[in-house]
Length: 531
Image 1 (spheres, rainbow, N blue to C red):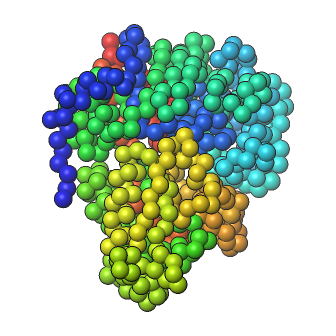
Image 2: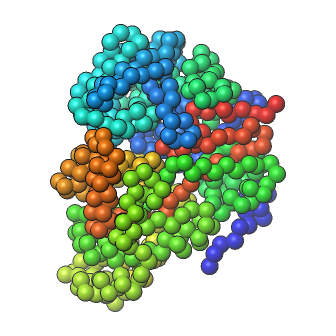
Image 3: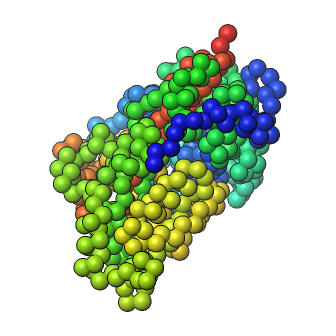
C-alpha cells in the first residue's frame, strides 16, 4: 500500500524533540544545515563520501570550478589556463592573494604538493584515476603550475573541479598526520574548520580574507554567513519538522514523502536541479560463492520492482533505474535498451529452478548445501533502511533471503572495502557514462570503489581507450562496449535515478542548486538572509 503524505499531523508533536537535536541560532548570520549521514573523514584524497565533498567545497578550493549548468569550466584559484595542442600539457596561472585560513599565502608549491599527494600510491586514494595519467606536476614559479600527462584525458579539467583536487596545506597535513581531516583542516575556502563531532555536528566559520570565489557567483567573498553547523539528523520526520519550524534553514536531504507538503508550505521554497545524475544501486561482489553465479545475479535483478520502489517509497519523485547510468548522460548507448533487465519474477524463478537452486522447507533456496542468503552491507539511516527492506522483500519472493547489515557512515566506508559481504548498497554522482564506468569497473580500483571485484582485462583496455580518446565516436564506442559487458554480466541491481532537491526557508534568498558531486550548496557563497 502506498504511504500517505501526512507529515503535518505529527509536526507539533515532534517539534519539541527536534529542538533538543539542533543547536539554537546565536545570531542572524548563522545557519544550521541538516543532513542524513556523516563522512568517514574530511581528507579530500581519502574519502569519496558526498558528506565529505559538501564540506570540502566550502573549506577548500580547486584550480578550476564548474558552473551550475554542469558543463562550463570556470576559474577557481587559477585565473586562467592553457592547453597544448596535443592535450598533454596544462599550464595553470594562479590568482594573487589567495590565503589559507591561518593567513599563510598559497603558492604553486601548495598546488603541486596537493595534486602529487592525491596520486601518490602511498596515499592510496580510491579516486587517483581522476587525475589522469600524470607524467609530472611542476611549479614553474610561485603562480604557475605545469600539469603534464602521459596520455590525453579530455575530462581532466572537469575532474579538477572535484573535491579530490582540493588544495591543502602541507604543514597542516604533516602536523596532524592520520588526524588530518579529522581533527583539523587548514584550507583556502570561504569557510574555515572549527570543530567536528562525528555522527553529530561539524562547524565551519567565515574566512574573513576570502575574496577569490568563482566568477559566476554574484558574491565572490567573503561569505554572507558567519557560521554554518552541519547537523546529522538521520530521521526523515525530524528533518522535515526542523525545516518547517525554522530550526534549520536549508537542506538537500529532503524526504521525498514530504516534498509536496514542503512545496505547499508558505515558509518553504523547494528547488529542483536536473543537470547532473545521481544513481542508487546494489552491487554484487562477483567472486563470492553464491553471487559468483551469473544466473543468481540475473534472477535477483529480475526480482526487484524498480517502478514500485520509485512510486511507493519515493512518491514518484525519482526515476526507476534499469541501467547503471542515466539515459541522459553523455555516451549513453541507446542500443543498451535490449540488454536491460526489467521486473519479471516468473522468469527469475525459472532461471533459479533451472540452475539447480531448490527451495528449502522455509522457502529459501539452496544448492549443494549452500543457502541463497547473501550478506548485504548498507548505510544506516532512513534512505537505505527503506531501500534494503523493499529489495529484501522482493528477493524473498523468489527464495533469496538477503541478510542486511547496516553501518553508520563513519565506519561503513571501511566495512565496504573488506571482502566480508556479497552485496553492497551505494549511490553515486556522475556527468558522463565514462566517468561512472571508470570509477567502478577498473580493476585497479579494487577493493574500493570497485567493490564488485570486477577484474576483466578487456574492460580495462576499453576504459583506457575511452578515457584517452580525442575522437568522440571512438570514446563512445569504447564506453558502449563496457556498458553492454557489465549489464550482460548483471554486476549491479540498478534501483533509481535521483534529481537534486533543495528545500530552504523563505527567510533565505533563493538558493541555486549546484550538482557537482551532488553537493547542492557548493561553496555556500550565495547563502544569505533576505533583507
